Image 1: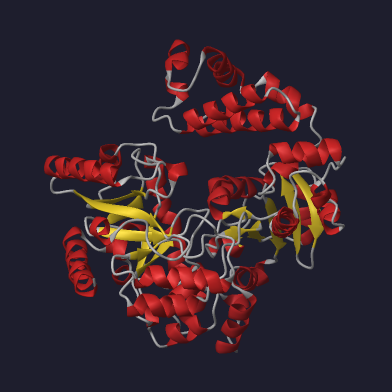
Image 2: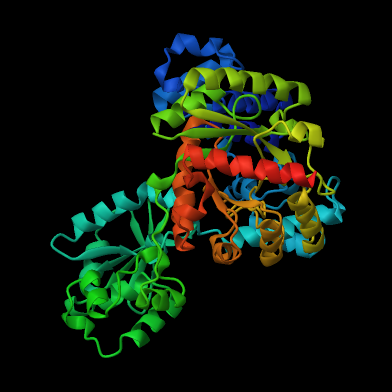
Length: 562
């Protein structure tokens, strides 16, 4: 059990205590323990039991519960509270905007025990009749529940990727000697996955007979040519049946969007797919280069392939430096030196430290005095760590009026500035656009961070006109971030092609808050490939010398415009 699972247990315990109206002092202390565990730089599993009570933020009582979790995998008090809580009330914890204390009111005073019932009550205007619930809160709850229901059975790519190949191995094991191919939107590298899809060279009856005897798989739905199973892994599995002759056709169809597949079939009419052995042979016979799964979205790709103009897609190995990372100077878990050493271990050439700015008080944003201290510290590290280099940056909050968080004199001390919205995110498009455009026009803005503020499956983000934002970035020489955190992946890859047409650089950045978060860069690369991004168009693929030259040019440009 890793630290995050232990922290989640304490966080859930704190929330359940509030839901049940129990001792608020204890619930707050458990929430504090959860926060302390999340910020540990060492795994609790690696420590002797007697060392745990001495850790910052962890007392003797909490240490006992941690050891109980480590020894048994369970926490008795949490199990008891969970059993006393209706499943629908537990599910309400997934609804943003209503915390545990509001859930207590919904359950105990309104006598509502499910999310569906809560939505109905909101639409009946009943929520705002209770203390602490106004009309605005009620509408926010409606919007959040509807978004939640829409995405309830969807999963982030990162979560599915953790189990995809184990599931694939299991499917191969129960169908020995059968051709099997992983397909669907997982192989297309979509941000959100509904089910793991497989094409199986077996008849409908064969699949049905095998799966009915397979533990951990429950039939949910039978389609025209597939079965969908709920699984103990938590992700649905869709199995397409296919006789030998139709295997390739079905694989091409299920690995493509419908519009791409139809265009592909129209482009190669007359080719007998039944006699071909694999996809490589198919594309060769069709006179096309192999089109990777991630590009099987838009029919325009087929024309590019025909004319030999498919670009070489950016690869994980093309990343030369980490741009956008946080340290323990703000809300990161590791020191700047630890983050830099991890980058060196990954074979990278530089690190851009971009802690939060002062308005982000919740994240210990940096005051002007602390910025000066941090810059001195970075200078010392750079002397020690040559030729590796650490760049001085800030993730500056874009304030409500669109201005950045510091004066020009302070902004001028950074090597680069990432401008991002973190507060007052419930905006109309008009407000969001005015705020972002003003920030983009600030001469010290180097990169526009996570353009819409979206959190996949949790928050849709504020509305923007992507083309106008990209046009403004083109006019002001501002780079657009593709935030690689798997919960963000923002900007949306579907708008990157227009940015490339306008000669706007993209920067694939992990927004890492701890060492392990540096690896999130791979998820940004995966969606960037869908947009046909090349290493030449990605700022974090610039080697150290080219990156320094880029910053030098942008700095000269800044000074002209101040």
